[in-house]
Image (cartoon, rainbow, N blue to C red):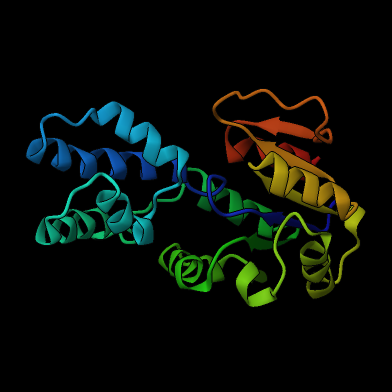
Length: 217
């Protein structure tokens, strides 16, 4: 029986990939409007490949040989505007938290800088639902290092085998939890293929609500 469930944040509790891609597409459409020769689809794929987020957008635009500083500022501001305010948890997250907390402790381990991850945590009001919240920059260690998982276990007062980890990243979540000796559930809404050398999850789910029978059994 599990005594705790720990979650990843990005692309587990909300769809970062879809949200970010939509933001990029709107920003780059403005570039297409000003510079009709630009291949917007190719530009989008390049931005995705290079992981262009808020901080990288001005340099990305300058790299396209755009030297119009007011236009770069306009596109960057449009890209960033209400970035955090418009984020939304997956629709079954809150009911899942409520059900889980009737049986187990609930927590979060997220990689990333405090400046962005804490804003998301506050926007989603996750502190109301979590006994433990760990942000990698604050912890001084990041997934997949098992040390960050052990830090959460110490805070929860649970053993690895009785603490279930839930995340989407094969590299950070699955490999990290496995290295820490924890069972894990792979969140895989896009039906991606698990690499052959990856550790095996106890279950693969497309929606968080599918987690409940695993904990309540």
